[in-house]
Amino acid sequence: MYELVQISDKCYYINCPAKIGVYVADKDHVCLIDSGNDKDAGRKVRQILDRNGWQLTAILNTHSNADHIGGNRYLQGQTGCKIYSGGIEAAFTKYPVLEPSFLYGGYPCRDLRHKFLMAQESDVTDFSEEGFPKEIEVIPLPGHFFNMTGFGTPDGVVFLADCLSSRETLEKYAVSFIYDLGAYLETLEKVEKMEAVMFVPAHAEASADVRELVRFNRDKVYEVSEKILSVCKEPVCFERILQEVFRGYGLTMNFEQYVLVGSTVRSYLSWLKDTGKVEAGFQDSMLLWKSV
Image (cartoon, rainbow, N blue to C red; front, top):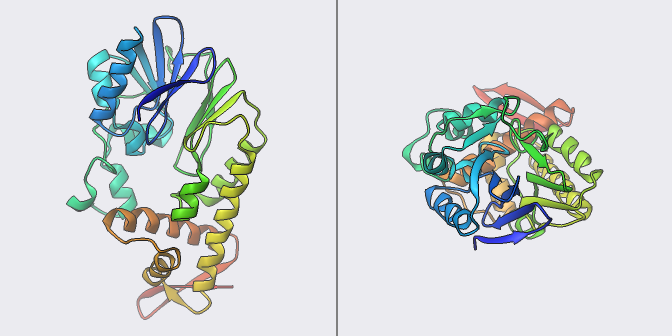
C-alpha cells in the first residue's frame, strides 16, 4: 500500500484505497491528483515526495468526497501548496460538514461526523484561476458527485476519479454511490469513447482500455434499477425499498451504509420517476413509490 507506480514519462499514481495521481511538471515540482483519506495518508504522500526530491506545488481535487480530500489540509499546511477545485465541490471542500449533511438530509449525528464522511476543511482555488497548470485538461465527469472532474495530462494519461468501480467491488456490493443517474450514464458513454495511453480510475486498476469496465458499470446500474422497480410493483415507502435493496444484495446496515446506499437509492428513484418508470403519490401522510 502507498507504493509509487510509474505509468508514463511524467505521471505516476500512489496505490492506496483511492489512487492519488502524481504529475511531474519538471524534475523538481509535482502536482497531486487528490490527496487520500486523512492526515496519515497525507503524511505518507509527503514522505514519497521527499524521497524523490519533489516539491508539491498543487493538489488538483477531482471531487470533494472525504477519501479524496482528506490529506488536503495536512499537505497544504506542510508545503503551502494551492488546492484547486471547482463548482459545488469547492464548497464541500471548504465546508466539509456539507457532505454528511447532504447524505443524511439533515444535521448529521456523531455516527456520521467522522473522517470517512467529513474531511478537515482546506482552502481552495478555482480551476479557472491563474496558476492552475494550463497543460492539464480538466474533464467534466459528473454523476458520481455534483461537479466531479477528471484530469488529462500532456503525455496521454487520464485520471478518471470515481466514475468507474472495479468489477470486484460491484460484484461484492452492487450499489456504488451515484448522485445523478442521468449524468452518470452520460459520463460512462463519454469515457467509453475516450482514448488515452493510460486510464487511472481511483477505485479500479489502471488500464489502457476501460471499455469493458465501463460496460460492466453501466450494466450494474440497470440491474439495480430493475431491482428497485421489482420492489415497487405495489405502492411502497422508501424505507421498505431500502430494506429490500440491502436484503437483496446481502448488504450490512449501519449509519454510514444507510446514508450512502440510501442517498443512492433516492437518486435512482428520482431518475426512474423523471424517465416515467415509477410514479410517486402521498397516502396517509406517507410518500409511496410504484412502478408504472
